[in-house]
Image (cartoon, rainbow, N blue to C red; front, side):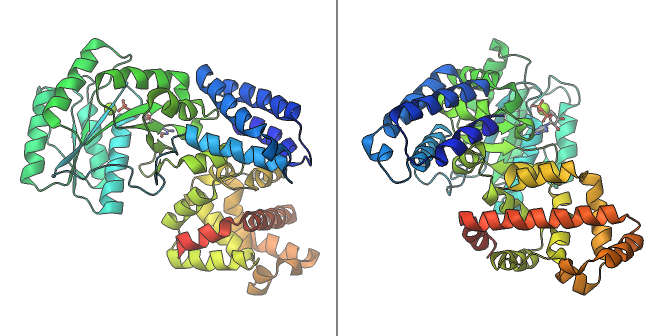
Amino acid sequence: TLSGNLGSVFDRLRGRGALSEADVREAMREIRVALLEADVALPVARDFINRVTEKAVGAAVLKSVKPGQQVVKIVNDELVAMLGGDDAGAADAAPLNLDVRPPAVVMMVGLQGSGKTTSTAKIGKLLKEKQGKKVLMASLDVNRPAAQEQLKVLGEQVQIATLPIIPGQQPVDIARRALEAARLQNVDVLMLDTAGRLHVDAALMAEMKAVAAVATPAEVLLVVDALTGQDAVNVAQNFSDEVPLTGVVLTRMDGDARGGAALSMRAVTGKPIKFAGTGEKLDAIERFHPARVADRILGMGDVVSLVERAAEVIDKEEAEKAAQRMMKGQFDMNDLRMQLNQMQKMGGLGMLAGMMPGMKKAKAAMEASGVNDKVLVHMDAIIGSMTPKERARPELLNAKRKKRVAAGSGTSVQDVNKLLKMHQEMGRAMKQIRKMGGIKGLASLLG
Ligand code: GDP
Ligand code: MG
């Protein structure tokens, strides 16, 4: 993966006391290869390397105390810029500009199967739950049978009204009717889910233009599949030639091992990625934060996203307590138990490993010792069979106590040992976060 490839280059750079210009150029060659392997567009990779090299071979950097770290920082800053982080305050501004006379129309466009309908419901849910907006959703997809019903079903799941379906009505007329209904019902945001095609074609573009002319959307979001890599970027370019896109929703980021689409999107199309889809569930969507994605690519883990996600599923008070305990370097079996439960809710082991620094190693260690998502359930039972004292001080667990706990939880001593090992690994990961200073952000987020 890109993060793995870059990670090893950076580990080497960071470890160096003195760097020569040749060292930097060699590292840049490796980074260039890693970017191309990740399906980053060639001109984008080339520009990137040129910019970084220019800054990194400067005498001030090479003669500094920690040149390797400086170079890593330059790469990081350029990555953030490449991902679209150059907007002033972009990380904090609301991703959508809905500051118009209501109803603000959000039009979702894209190819068939890119995730438009799912993303419509996900974003509608965010707007309703996070911003208290009254939302109405309407499907203009008359091409695919049952497409309109699909949105209706999703609407029921997220408890957002959908425009009643009138069979045979055409997209532009549906858009008109949706606007009318939105006005009558004092709707804040009208989400228009549109039809896609297998490829960008003239008929699709004409339809999108006609709908946009009627709906005058505040936001036109292009939904593209991150797994299609460079194709996603090409599709974005084609669309933006025809309809005034305001942003991109990159779906299937959960399966995107390479990251090329995210990296090239801004540079090639000039359009910001506003949201990332991270799964099939209707809360599997995140605001796109360039700085955090850059961190993740650099293998530093995405602590802030992880904590935000945790804060959503964990009871806030509990989370605050846990954060405080972590800060103090305390992390006992009760904390681990809570973590295990949350881990399950957050999508299991794999999800966590990609986000948390140190967790990659922890995950590898866990897997090596046979831990997987199923085993996590057993672990909860094991902790349940410990006495309060043992939970607070796991080092008390000698062979005799382990036997008792194993019997009580219907597991084996080996399983108990696995859990203890995992607890140690996680404690180590927490320490790593503390060292990074990430816990400060964590505490303020939860507080
Ligand atoms: P549309 O044709 O553009 O409307 O696409 P749909 O919204 O119907 O989505 C097609 C499929 O992709 C569905 O099975 C979705 O559950 C799935 N999907 C959408 N977004 C994501 C995502 O971010 N991650 C994953 N793993 N699947 C997604
Ligand atoms: Mg659809």
